[in-house]
Length: 337
Image (tube, rainbow, N blue to C red):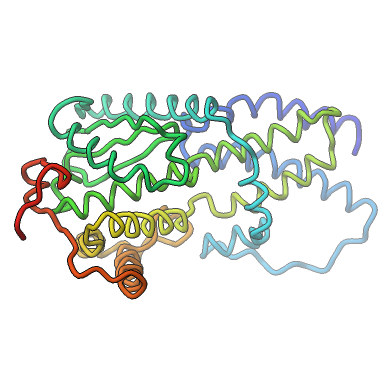
């Protein structure tokens, strides 16, 4: 690598990487664009350098612009499991996670305020959710890392719920109205806690740390390590959204609710209603999807329920429609069903 190119890449990294240190403040598209520019420039430079030494190869297969997934796979190469596992190995301390989560929560709450959506952190509904979370949290493998789970309710009819690194859950009022039963709500809570348990929201943070480490090695900047990490990161950015994480969280929601004696089919019904509501969802290319298709989530939840029933049969499973309606958790009172 020439001295000029080395200096150019180092200067680019110094400029770009500090911005990437706060991923929650940037949208997925912005983060992808930033890293894409940096790494593509690096890869292109490496390609030019190699071209001087090697004869031009035969013409490659033309890029497919009609299928985004195919285009990214052709451009970056397939994201191998070992690549993903390398990123997963990048450590994120509890303090770092709290910082990442705090920035993400602050930015999201600011966006809700901009939309004039009121957010509350007290009241009967918050207390009800906290009680249900208290039942589910012990089922997390990393429950000791999340001793305190903070809860907010956004006063909006949107049927959504989100979790943030460090242990923050934001439920929309519409989700409480949409689920229909305490069993379904426990499944949704399990889904959100599963994201925390597996560190799903830390994936971008790990990618950014890996990129930074390419420039901040113990022995200084290493061009070889830079390009190695760059190729790995580009393959991982081939899929900016990871529906498999949502599927994993769905299955945890099913299992944990079943272990608590709730009927996971109530959670499955939520996916079915979402499918009926959003029938045009299959028009969205797979590359741009953040979640599996709702009908596929429904089928996966039912399949997991049937598997659990065979392994550990339960004659009765609780639904809790009145519990949800009255905001009284089953742990306090069971209603006849």
